[in-house]
Image 1 (cartoon, chains in turn yellow, brown):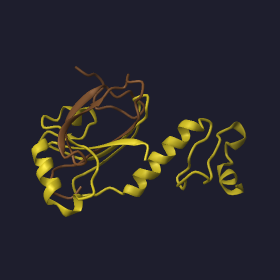
Image 2 (cartoon, helix red, strand yellow):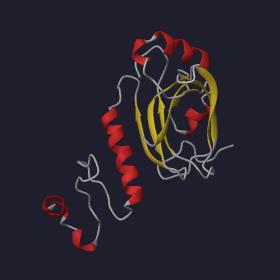
Image 3 (cartoon, chains in turn orange, blue):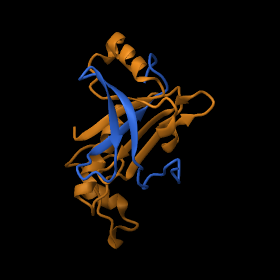
Length: 132
Length: 55
């Protein structure tokens, strides 16, 4: 997929092992499961809940230069949409190659309409989205 | 100590390390993030509240 994926919670690596071995849903998981017991890394990203000692549902995309490009944090009770994560990841990869283009909300994959911001487009985004 | 935390989008992520369980190798390991590393790849971090719950 072109990215190093790491899942992180404040559980220990031993609990990660036990969970991965026992939960059938995780049978196909291939990503390293990070352990952030003290919450140091979680605090960097603003997902550590000091009240509970647990992490909120945060997803972060970091480019090869180490710049944080996308941050999404959900409260405990809302799961994430992996399709939307993949859309954002693909868009970020695409725009890192095509630096004069931007991906509008409906962009899903390479070949979909992008915009190239310019003075001529000001006030005419609708036409720019429509004409392609 | 790291300044500017929590990080905002557009900022540089500081280096950090995490102990890991790697389901492929079935072994423990370490994940090291280092923005200065020349062969740095894209990274996706996926935080969740607790093992044995839904993610």
